[in-house]
Image (cartoon, rainbow, N blue to C red; front, side):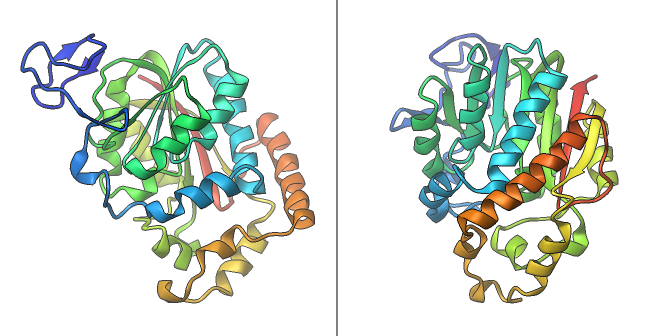
Length: 289
């Protein structure tokens, strides 16, 4: 059900007008805006990168292989799902991958930054896309699956977001999460990306459990490339002002294909049930208790 952010009333109106207090979100360019004060400026996302991200995600080995992991996880852990919501969808690359492999799903997605949402809407025209603060989700028991992919590390109040996600999931549903792992890997990239933290496995599992979820699977990924990842971080400048963000996406076709093949092999192990002990990222699947 929909939940009014003013009075907390529950309703089903498709026009988003609360029958109890009359509140309704504003619209900008056809997108409903639930957190207007955060739509343009926030400390968790640089909107200048929306266009570049939309272009580079399509081929970059890291994004492509993360999508494959997510699509597999939906089928593996939530095969009966009818509704999928993505928190922090950015330019909609993951959302478009979900639509391609699950044409039957009713898709919804949000981002705190309004700048990126037109890209997501163009990629998946039939998705319900809106601007929203993850700490105030306007739904209660509405979705079978909620995905938060490299989102929680941007938010200081990550446990509040997990609690909101729990309320928005139907009984029997669950959550899929990816986050950056290992605090010792902190670098100028994390500073530039406005990350609040890199997670340990213990921290993520405990926070998800406290929010009311039962963890089904937690594994590292980008494990086989960890030595290269660490080396690249050691060679980076320490000052965010000296960092060129385009360098993260600047990779030749041969190297991109080779690294992608390495991650594809790694994912074969994950699909076989191997929980990898270390890697630059963490993947977690959990069901709502």
